[in-house]
Amino acid sequence: MKLQFIGTGAADYDWKKYGEPGIAGSTSTLLDDTVLLDCGPTVPAALKRFGVDSMQITDIFLTHSHSDHFNIESVRQVAEGHTVRFHGSPQACEKVKDICEVHPFEKYGDTAQVGGLCQVTAIPASHYLQDLHEPAYLYIITDNPGKSDSKTLLYALDTAWMPSVARAMLGKSHLDAIVWDATMSQPGDWRIFDHSDPVMFKAIRQALYNSGNIDDSVKIWFDHRARTLWPADSAEQEAIARHENVMLAHEGETVII
Ligand SMILES: [Zn+2]
Ligand SMILES: [Zn+2]
Image (cartoon, rainbow, N blue to C red; front, side, top):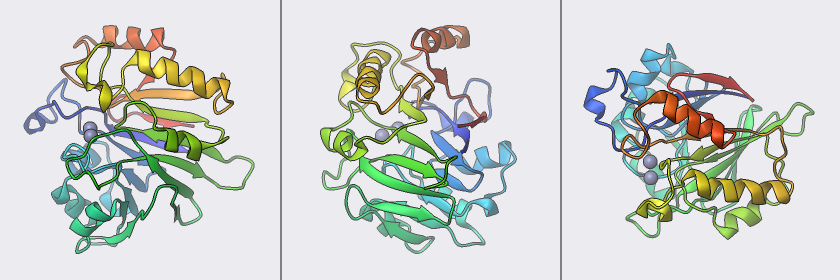
């Protein structure tokens, strides 16, 4: 499984300045060169910047409808000139049904197939949306399902503690990698009800380890880092990641799971 982090920032960046040094893009990840996880304001510019032709994009999976993850104009630009399948909440699908071929997740635990490439299961996030009836999703993504080289990724942003329903749906799945919400770099922030800090993640990680979902080979990235809640100095950022034995998602970086 190939991931490219095409945006790693939370919503507190000024994206009019996107492209200037130190300005992270809206959080979005490209999976196997063809599948976009979220499509926020900087995605079309990021695809150009990192040399990705939007005609390659076959599917968009939306985690939730906050404006740093879901920008209808960005979806329109990515889908221009070809058919893109859009997967997400029924509410989000309704908003892009004239632009994309929409495939709403009707309930938690629903799975979508992306050709023979991967399967994606939507489980609940702990994240507040203004429309209280609209779900926010974490995704369990498995490539080459059923094959010996199959890998499974938990894509978990934006979220605070994993809800118990998500935990139950994760079941005994073995996770090879996790991309986790790291909006805060320190504990004690009021945003803990919607986002995570390293201390929260450490506890979740230990529980996943104890229940056999992860082992020492797991690869973990902290993503969706807030400009105002992380040190500006990149060496200090890396030190926090090293201390937690995780990696930071970097703008434009490609990683293999
Ligand atoms: Zn966000
Ligand atoms: Zn959000």
